[in-house]
Image 1 (cartoon, rainbow over the protein chains, first blue to last red):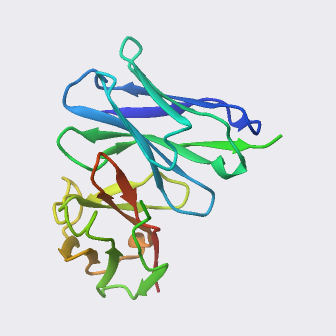
Image 2 (cartoon, chains in turn orange, green; image 1 turned 45 degrees about the vertical axis):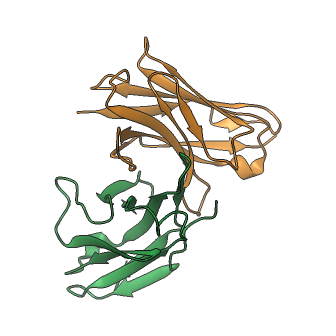
Length: 120
Length: 110
């Protein structure tokens, strides 16, 4: 059974860089069949797509976040990561990682999510 | 790229049917049959309920169905059950390798 698990600091200071990792178990991140994505949800509000990555390193970002976002993949560790720079309180959210089947446009497996709070 | 428009809330009684709309534009929902729907219970991760407008993943009840007309996609839940009470989000391809979610709809089963 595929499982995704987000990890990283739960508290980040304003203007610093938020860094999260998603560890994939029960399947290979190097499979050519899948893309991997990040989605976030500010408290009490809706979902926002952040970006996707293919195992080859090809990335696709939300235009509204593109200048601050970097998504990378480490196939040796079966992980992919999110970095969001120059964070503000508006970046406080639950961050989810998820899997997107290749050739499709939906997420079929999600991690449980991790809350990141931006505060001094 | 703006969020797709969903009603903030809908409600229904057990056994009834409800429909949640998701309105986009000719740049997303209107052009691509690539709308998916997610159910989210409080404190939980979203769960895929419908993809490519009307396809159901294995294990999802056939009480959930999707459709699209023009730039508006819809999720219909028939035979409402108490466990269906949750937030529902639509999600669509928006071209140029970008995707967009709807604002979400809170379903209350009265």
